[in-house]
Amino acid sequence: MATSGGVFEVLRTGVTVLAETAEWASEIDVERAEMARQRAQDVLTANLPDLNRPRAEGALARAQNRLKVASNL
Image 1 (cartoon, helix red, strand yellow):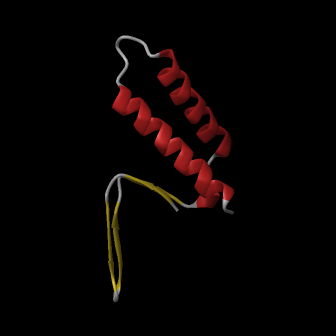
Image 2 (cartoon, helix red, strand yellow):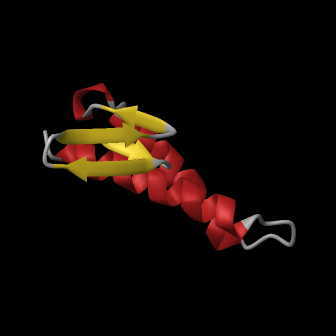
Image 3 (spheres, helix red, strand yellow):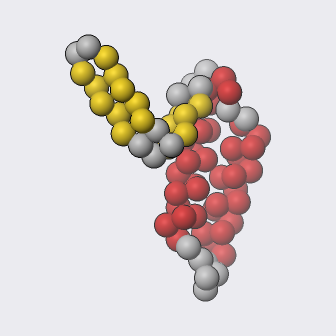
């Protein structure tokens, strides 16, 4: 499962997940995730003056995570 944001609590009795987003690997649209990764890389490479670097880096990390999870099917 690909997740972003949130908290995991792991106990002997179970696991609690409070996440902003969560997707099973089989639900990930690989083409869409790859396009998001490329867009984020393009934005970071362009280094425009009004660049919101933390937001672009977060988008890149989310896309990379989704692609990694999807590749483990």
